[in-house]
Picture 1 (cartoon, one colour):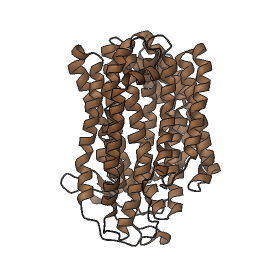
Picture 2 (cartoon, rainbow, N blue to C red):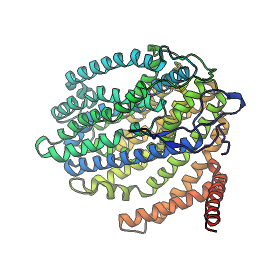
Picture 3 (cartoon, rainbow, N blue to C red):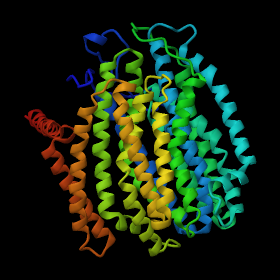
Picture 4 (cartoon, helix red, strand yellow):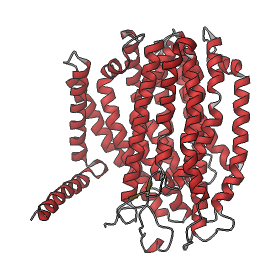
Length: 564
C-alpha cells in the first residue's frame, strides 16, 4: 500500500462478486488523521479501475456512435433528409445534456452522496436513500412525461423555432414526434445513472450509450427502405427505453439491500431537492446546449448539408472530450462525498488533479484531429451518399471546432466542481449564458462570410470565454482551489499540443493514402506530445514515468525470484 495525494490509501480493488454484480467495489481504506473514522473513501486503485471500465465502455459507445453516424451518412448522405433528422436530433442532444450527462446528474449525485453519508452515520430509520427515491422519483417521472407529451403535440412549432429556414419541415416534424419520447426515457436513465454512480457502481451507467447506439443502427438497417430517415428517429425512441432497462435492475438491488453498519460521521445533514437547487443546474445545462440550437438556427439558412457537416464534425471532435471527462464522471461522486463529509482538502486536491489530467488527455486528441482532419473524415464517412465535397467541408469545420475543444472539456470538468457541494449557485449559469450570448452575436457576423466555419468559430469563442470565467471564479464560488497553480499546470500540455500538432501536420502531408497519412500523423503527434510533456513535466509526467518504470522493473524482478 502507498498513500496518495488525496489522502486515501491504495489497496487492491476487487470486483463485485455477488451474482449479477454490476461493477467494481471500493476496497477498504483509511484516510488521514483528520478524517479517521468516517466512511471509507475509495482507493486510488478503485478509482483507476472504475475509470478504466467507464472509459472502455465510453469508447465502445463512442465507436458505435461513429457507426451510427456512418450509417446515417451512408444511407442518406448529407442533404435534405439528414438535415430534417438532425433538427429532430436536437431534442435527444438537449435531453442527454439536461437529464443524463450534466443537469440532473449535478443535482442527484450530491443528493444521493449526502443520503449515503447520512446512512453511514447511523441514520437508518427511515433509510435516507429510500426516502430520497420516494420523494423525488414519482414527481420527476410525472414532469418528464408531461414535457414529452407537450413536445409530441407541439412538434410543428418546435421545428419552426429550431430551423425556420428548413425547406421540408414535415419530415422534421415526423422525426421530432418520435425523438420527443426521449425526454421520459432519458430522464429515467439519468436518474438511475446518478444514483448508481453515487453508490460507486459504474458499469451499468457507462453501458447505456452502447445499447442506445446499437438500437439506432439496427433500426436504420431494418427499416430504412420503408421509413427512410424516420427509422433513425424510431431508433432513438427504442434506444432510450433500452437505456433505462440496462440500469433499472442494478439500481433496484442497490436500493432494496439493507443498509451497512453505521460508522462515525461528521458531515452535514444534506439538503432536499428543492426548486431553488434544481433550477440553476437545469438552466446551466440548457444554456450550454443552446450553443447547438444557435448553430442549427444559423445553418438552416445555408445551402442543404450545412447542418449535417456541422453535426459530423462535432461528433468526431467530441470523442477526445468524452474520453477525458470519464475521469471526472468517476470522481464526481468522490468529490461530492468528500464535501458531504466535510473533507474539503481532499475535494480540493481531487479537483485540481482532475483538471490537469483531463486537459492532458483532450489536448492529445485535439492535436491529432488538427493534424489529420481530412484523413479522419475520409476514412470514417466518405462512402455511399457522402461525397468528397462533403468530406472536405466537414474536415474544414472540424479543425475550427477543435480550437474550442479545450474550452468544452474544461467547462465539463469545472462545472462539476461548482455543483458537487449540492448547494444552489447561479454563477455557472450566468457565465454560461454570457458565453451563449457571445456565440449568438459572433455567429450572426461570421455566418454570412464564412458559412459553417464561421458558426464553428463562434462556438469556439463562446465556450472558451465560459471556460475562462468558470476557472477564474472557481476559488471564490466553490472549493478553495489554487487557481494560479492550475493555470500554470494547464499551460504545459497546451504548449506540448501546439508543437505536436504542427509536427503531425508536416508528417501527414507527404502521403496520398488517407490511412498512411493518418498513421504517420498519429505516430508523430503522440511521440512529440509525450516528449514535450516529459520535458515540461505536464501533469507530473516525469514522476509518472519513473513510477511506471519502477513498476515494470519490480514486476520482472518478482518473476525472476519466483523462478528460482
